[in-house]
Length: 434
Image (tube, rainbow, N blue to C red):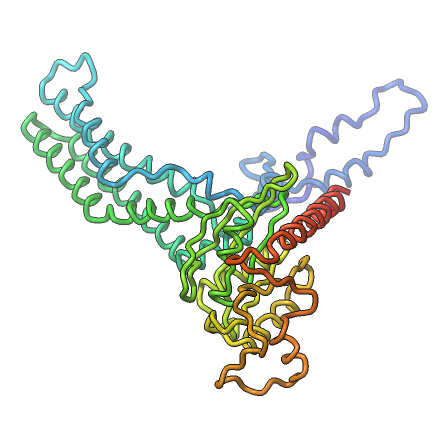
């Protein structure tokens, strides 16, 4: 049993202490070996083993401990860096063709040895041709934890919470099974005692690996669908001013995006026409801006909202956007003016840091008397609601895509708003650089 020992044991002083001796005849030289010895005690600990000194395990661990740097959250654009995922049937077909082309190592004269060498190499090749692409996918699809908060929200709300990680785990599980079975059968083939046995074990191994991959290859196709879905997400440049259209369903947001930008959203007369985040661009005076159409919001608590509504809140929460809030007081959208007013007040109070512009759409349908739904409940601030029913929020622009009324003023005000947003982005960037 090794016994920890002090450095003061007789006859076992480290050689560094002996170097402190003063050469004979050297006058006026005063050394302080005790101080040096204390320093050695503070930085080192030893134990005796077979009459020699060895550093203790604790010291070795301390020296080898390296602090791992923490990973940074990625900037937006991770979805465009995703690896190309091949269909599972193509991966399997390619792997089988390449494996069967593998020949035995040259120079093996014995037929049995040559056959088992070829079999082991082919099984190993098939295993690698299947496992390497799967490993590449697992390693190169980003960890959701390190995605930008906006893109992390897109993954959760578009694919479903936990689905992304589940698919990657299944792909990695398939890779591990292919590697395990491949190694097992390659080893069995290499131990064959005859040419016939080697051929049988080769065929058995090829069949088993192919069978395992074929049974679970759907997870690879699921990953392919995930990659396609994520790549189709709109790319947003955080340094380019962005206009975000917000409002209740069917109030005319998509029609305004069509008027203002290069985006071509679907325009229909039913709720939740916008089934995701749609992006377009506005070019004003040779300046390029971004505009995004978001799914409509209904009057309800966050826990009751569907994923489409949560996408809208994710954009407002995680992206530096200016807001163009669209109101429809004509009674055509299916959401009462009082409900729209409640939604508007909540969103306006919740996202106070955004630059803001209010628009009342479908002005050609507005009537002299405000629209009142029979199912509407009395509003606490009735006077404020009556004013809203007549003309919307204070300072709102009345527009009509059908008659073109107010569109020129809207474009001018949007340009001013986006220039302010650009100045805000630059100011934020300068403050971060300091």
